[in-house]
Image (cartoon, rainbow, N blue to C red; front, side, top):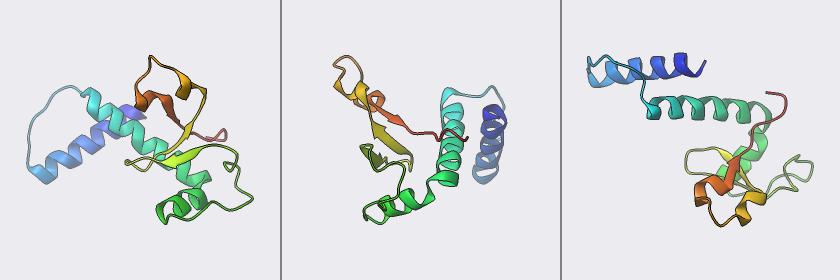
Length: 104
């Protein structure tokens, strides 16, 4: 599914830029495809929480994520700060993992 998403996005990008380059998928294309599916999975389950974060409002009291240290990153992915945040040998990006709902 990731590869298909990456190929389709690359095709759409090539049409917009009128690029005719052909070749293998790059790591960036696969990473972007993964982000697309992460956003879709999160928005299906946590649309209210994501809307609250985008509007700088607190989450509702019945939110399943209320007990977690959560934030919305610059790419629109809902992330939580977990035990990895105390690690000294990981980058700041890796310390804040994204949250994928169990039902997806």
